[in-house]
Each structure stands twice: as structure tokens, then as C-alpha cells.
Length: 70
Image 1 (tube, one colour):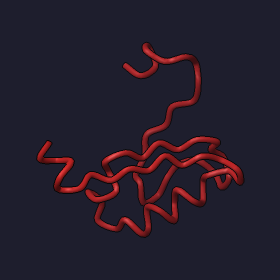
Image 2 (cartoon, rainbow, N blue to C red):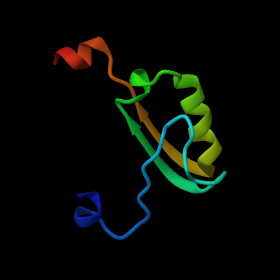
Image 3 (cartoon, helix red, strand yellow):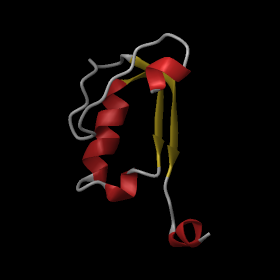
């Protein structure tokens, strides 16, 4: 669905604890409402940092109890 709805680009799916891109490969990483669901969030953050290019953008949001109730 993402490929049909969005402009051309590279789309990858993988395990957050072992991301498929090489080091410093991503200009933008979007991680919203998932970090708290992972078994090892610190390891996932380390992976995000590994694949994020210097000067890249990480969009990270976590859901708190108040957000979930709304």
C-alpha cells in the first residue's frame, strides 16, 4: 500500500533490533509509537543510530498512558 500511495523511494521492512540498511544509509527514520513495544528498546535505538546518516533526521515518538486513553 505504501508503494502505491507514496512517491518512488526505497522501502524496507525488518527487525528493529537488526535493521537491514548498511551503516549511515538513511537520511530519515520514522519511528512512531513502537519503541515501548520492543523487547530491547535500547538495542533498537542503537540500530537506529547505526543506520542514520550524520545530519539525518530521526522522528521518534512514544505513546504514553495519557495518549493511549485519548
